[in-house]
Image (cartoon, rainbow, N blue to C red; front, side, top):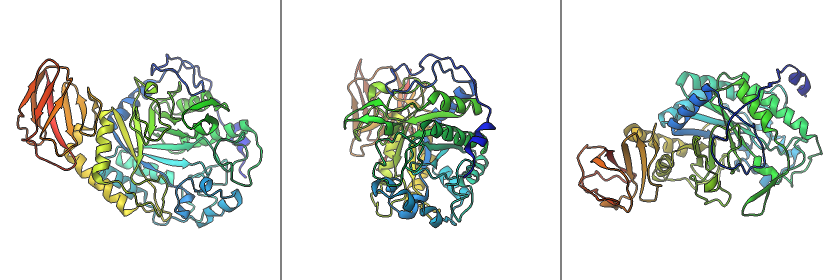
Length: 459
């Protein structure tokens, strides 16, 4: 086993005092204090502005679990013992992996960044880690650092690279006390929580120093150590020591953005807020972030799957249609949020052809209508199944998602209107505006199954 403590002794411990008012204006209900008084750097604020304009990114869930073809939670769901699960790396040899092909696929889809799992809940590291042998270099016949290859390909293509990093761990003994998941996995022993924090700090240091400038760190698993009654989270059982973890990130790469998929209000030290499989303020999953916990002044990001699984699932054929995927992207932008759309590569390193086709179709649409998505802010009205609105200055882009409408009516629409026209043809559209209401005639707008875009210029 590689010597964790030797590695840590080589680190320069950051000692920084951060100052800031709680930037999101919301009460923090996470149970973690984070970095009290955190003030983002100028580089960080610039990165936030870029992120907020990017609007579309690629999520990649990939690990040795892909060998079993049953999703990334297979170790937990099938209660596979540590001993048996540790046989998987020897079977993982993705010789068809091509980092440049992946990055080009994302770029052609209109995506501006990629977020990939560096380490998931199964504890396996998908890069050359010096603080564990349980990684892609030491434990697989592949012996290539996929993160290094992706980092190089992303730099060449001007795509930003983010690293997903799991807080919870189903393999390491030092993830102790145990959380709510992985309780049926045999072979786990008691351990020391402080050693686990030290391990995570060491790995984060590797990710932040060995791969050039990165877009940020995407944490997941906080919720594993919180009580849950089926409706809401309760007390936090451990100290994640976010002041140390977040502080390390901001010290080593001030421009790197920190996000945490905890489903709660923003913790001081975080730079964007994420929402899993739910648009901001919605709760179809039953554990979404409540509307009163949405950050007021931070970039937002929604993550979603193309089918029903994050990791490769051989039997998941529940692929969303191109219309569904584009509507989700448009609605996310209407909420002022990015969409981080996931693929789960197969164990040979290839991405399913169905998912490649979906991404290609989205890229085709964005080449025509991307100006109504990229660099926009949320519209004056919340999206519905009929429409979503994005905004650039005094220009509103009304996306009509219901192809059956021949006119659209708004009960309340503030602002004086200079013109209303079709995005494609530029033809002026008949409309009627009184003090509160707005009616727009859509008969002159070319009908598309996916979307019709109307340009509303305000005075």
